[in-house]
Length: 494
Ligand code: AHR
Image (cartoon, rainbow, N blue to C red):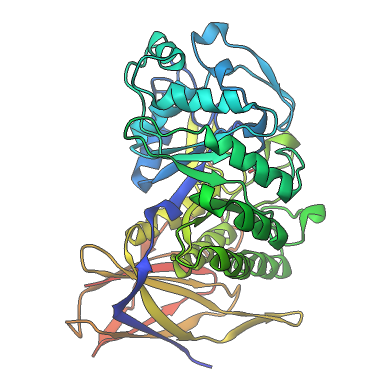
């Protein structure tokens, strides 16, 4: 079968929220400590304790929002331990992640400073599992109240006169698991109670996100939507890409073709999950007011040999780049319901966009995909149909090409393409309908490496990097390109 794509450049199917390009930074391993926060006295160049190289790289991605402080960590985080003079902040054990000492040097003020420097929206995740309603309520008061009150006064005493703007707030995390092992009926009632005290102060309007299902727990979605739809703005969903399940995690590098294939299959499963959870949400929220917030997604492999198993530090290869590309394409396809997503996690943990070693850093193949896809942020998703050969292994068959298109505010059409086959190149014919100009300017970049395990390290940071896509032909609104096996490309037309 030939590879043929038709794009209707004048038919929008909704806006791709830029918040689909969100990130997640937990107090886990070397994500916050060492990866983002080094402290003001560090030899590593920093701004208010935040490392400059990481700041600069993240700024270049235009990340729209950042979720913090967890994850599982959120449901044992007590925010008052992380304010006031750093030297007197309480030390605690991070029981979920490596049993290491957490000195609370990175707290609310440091996080808000990070968001300010990145010009990104903070997404704060509150503690339901081991925290009280009062504690959650006071955190929101501390961050957002402008008048005279105990919490606003405490914030001022700690050096922040004006309240911060805070839009996104999560009421618990994975409350079916590390966030309290609750049943959906119980969590739903708790959610209703806790969110009541997540107040809107002044003109600060909070978008409340309820803790959603684990992967395919459709009953959880059913109960939450049935009982609590009117109290929420978003419902979260978590799905990690694992080639062989949770019990048999695979190495991040040096995988075989079957593991490659199974990784693509697991990533593409996101489409079925969103479709089925959305169908349940549609019953209770047909106008799609409530967003599906995929606030944890990405690959989960074995940790790198010799590293703390609780730190979840893994390398990031061309395979991760493909997972990022196809997952973002799935989110574009569901942009009517998926209003936000957060890759796990920003630095040094799981499918990171940045890896650091001491003062050195590198960006990963996943970073390059986020950078190449930037033009889709807040663009109009376009109708696209495709015929593509099957990519088959061991009796399972996937579509070889994943593709989406959007029209940006600048009028250009952006087309993102992933060839998920590990060994078959694809000759693509792309018909562009509804363009004013039949032979517009086309420019494209590609991320590809002949070695499927190719990756960047702090000492060899440019092994995987985008290059100009050569050989693009366009005539009478028909684009022709060849995509090598295992590649991600983005074209800009017009
Ligand atoms: O991202 C790592 C962990 O995965 C998060 O803390 C938790 O929410 C999920 O299980």
